[in-house]
Amino acid sequence: MNPRAVALLALLVMAWGVNWPIMKMGLSHLQPLWFASFRLGLGVASMVVVLAPLGRLRLPPRADWPVVASLGLLNMAAFMVLVNVALLSVPAGRSAILAYTTPLWVAPGAALFLGERLSRGRLLGLILGLGGVVVLFNPLGFDWSDGRAVQGNALLLLAALIWAATILHVRRHTWHASPLDLAPWQMLVGVVPVTAMAALLEGAPQPDGSFELIWALVYNGTFATAFAFWAAVTVNRLLPALTVSLSFLCVPAGGLVFSALILGERLSLTNLAGLALIVAGVATVAMVGARERKA
Image 1 (cartoon, rainbow, N blue to C red):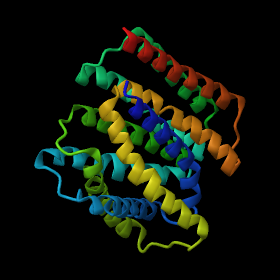
Image 2: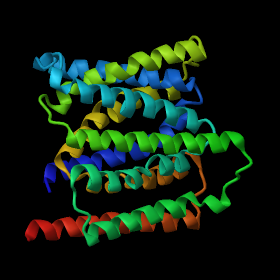
Image 3: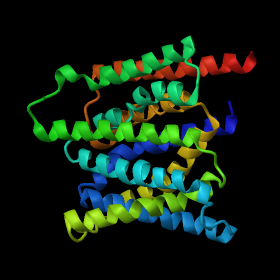
Image 4: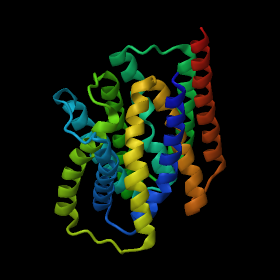
């Protein structure tokens, strides 16, 4: 595997893991759709600042517009809106777990549509990782009578399904421009419908002007969006879809830990057992990949 892609994947996992409690804090100061709109808007501005001086701010080739639309409308707009609304009623750590059930949908899709081989080692890693998610989810301890919580959990699972579809599209698409050059256009495609929906459903934005909101938006717009979404597309191009999706299971692990440290959310023995299974799954995939490189 590409060492730079692996390092980029590790940085991406850390950036998104810590962002779950940051999003939860930001949403206490601004409506969820407007939070997504501002996040994407700041992401567009960040990419313009980076690309314009380099002479790389140009319209995408026509052949890349399908993936620009797919990532902009689904992986950015739809995913962000669903997650932000769900975070109003679901703890940040649990939200991270459910949103990152993506490998459940990616694994069969990659085998069916991309022809990626599910070796026994990779399958074992996937089973361990998904087992960790099941343990962390703990459906037997869930209050099914709480309508808002049920809706929030369902929205997070839908977000995971949408993300899985875009991962498969990214892997199958024949790229003509680089992910960096396409990133601002993907964010622009996403911010337009999100802003229109926010204005229609939430009225005027009502930020409280707090410092916590400002730095939460800055982090989300620059690092967790502009950098992270470009990095996610890049690693999806350079690494096997199953490896990337399983590595992303480290994000909910980070989300749990950072939510406990920052927000004081409870980190139970069940959570720790789930974390152990996820780490075991990622380590298994890494060892299988190392053996395949030597073969």
